[in-house]
Structure formats: C-alpha cells, structure tokens
Length: 143
Length: 124
Image 1: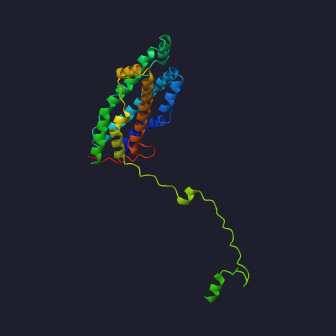
Image 2: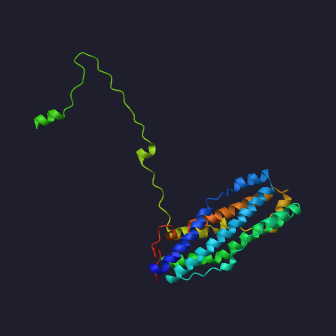
Image 3: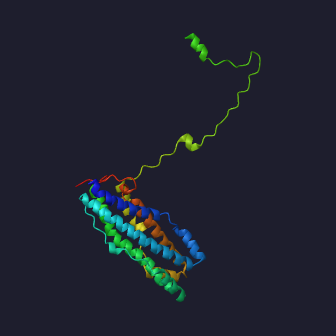
C-alpha cells in the first residue's frame, strides 16, 4: 500500500508547498488599506491583480490536494468526492481591465470590484461541500 | 583516612588573631543569557490532525467572508466612499486568511518529510 500511495502523498506535498509559500506573500490588509487611502485607484488595481492571481494559484493547488486526499481516503475505505477540476477559473485579462478602467475614467473599477467579490464567494461556496465531506471522513477514520 | 582528610581541607586564609577580618572577595557575576539559564520554554503540544481540521472547519464562518455586492455598493455610496475602504480591507483579509487556513489545516502527514502512509487513518 505504501508504494501505491507514495506518489499521491508526494503530489499532495508539492501542492502544499505552493500553498505554504503563498502565506509568505505580503497581504497585510491594514497596510493595503493605508496604501489605498494614499493612492486610491492605483493601489486597488495592483491589489486586484494580485488577489486574482492568488485565487487562481490557491484554487489550483487546493483542487490538487483535494484530489489526492480523495484517492488516499478512498484507499482507506473513506469516501471523499473527487473535486471538479474545471472549477479553477482562468486569470483575468489584466491589461484589458486596466485599459478599460483608464478609458472609462474609473467606472470599470465597479465591475472589477464585482468580480473581486463574487469570484472568491463562488470559490468558498463550491468548497464547502468538499470541506464537509473531508470533516466527515476524518471523523469516520478516527472512530 | 586522616591523611586524606587533611589533604581535602581548605587551607585557612583567615586573619591572624587580633587583625580585622579581611573583606570578602568581590563576587563576580557571569552574565548568562536567560534562555540558556532557564532553558527554552516548551511550546504547547501540537493540536492533533483531526482537531486542526475541525477547528478550521468550525472557523469557516470567520474566514469565508461572503460579500453582497449591492449591499457593499449601497453602503459605500451612503458613506461617501468610506465603506469602500472596509470592503477593500475585507477583500485582502479573506484571501490572506483563506491561504493561511488551507496551509495549516491539512493533515500533518502531508507535511514534507513526514509521510508515514496510513498514519492517522484506519481501514474500515
């Protein structure tokens, strides 16, 4: 069984390394707000680009970990649903959005805000059933 | 035996009778770092894997902040843009918290160099 599952552990570990590395990025919200007060608009655009990249990278790694966990738990007789890998969204067209924001005199930023709120909302809501299933499987395995 | 006792005796350095007692030698303090003297404070024992997963699962309401765009926009207009800074704060915070939770709540046996296959799991 060890030989069978070792590749899954190694792949999950690689995804976890990405997730752990992301925690070292500079994302202190209070400082970002201070910067936004100083240079509103520009800082928001920079933050939106970074947050979108974060979401894509995070979701890709998370789907990878969840997939490997479903294999590992399945081998131990615990059911974990396989995550939908098509749920990972693509990156925004940053150049196009910045151009649209400039030419619309900032009005396009409202639409960008809408995407920045709704994309992570969707990410959370899609992930909740997966997290519930993981919680149930962990409790079942330790019983 | 008596000879050995004599060898272990400290030679008397006291003053001769009638002389004032000599001042005690100055006490020399060697500086020892506190951490070295007391030893490092042991940290709390790590939370078991199931506990960390459960804690992250329970704390989902705090980390997974769900925005309602129209409510946020309405409050931003009503407060002349000030609420917009709060929205911006929450946008950055929830992504930061989400990443921290994901990287800390995954079972410990997925950590690098710690992959005992099947540890923490039992076959049903």
